[in-house]
Image 1 (cartoon, rainbow, N blue to C red):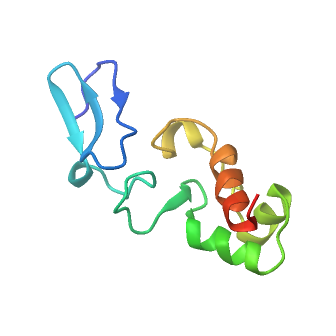
Image 2 (spheres, helix red, strand yellow):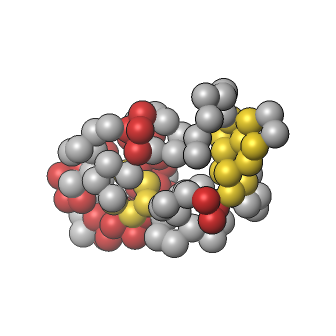
Image 3 (cartoon, rainbow, N blue to C red):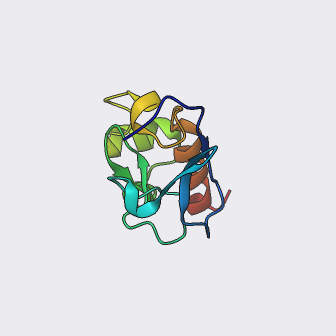
Length: 107
């Protein structure tokens, strides 16, 4: 049960905690989908609204994607935007998609 508290997100990739507030901690086993920035997340979903993974982005780059727009067209990312609810960080995934894309482009 989610209580009406201010929650914080744990960005440490090694930590089992995802969200925490005062005396409450939600761990990886308490959430429905893997949280991409945790080391052992499988799959590493980057766009939760369209369920686009890091591997999908990697394949898009391998197939010629050179820009964020290319990745979006090839993968279907960001088509069903409801990031505030779907993304564990509660914000748009475009920056994360771009970081993954740039890593595979070697930028």
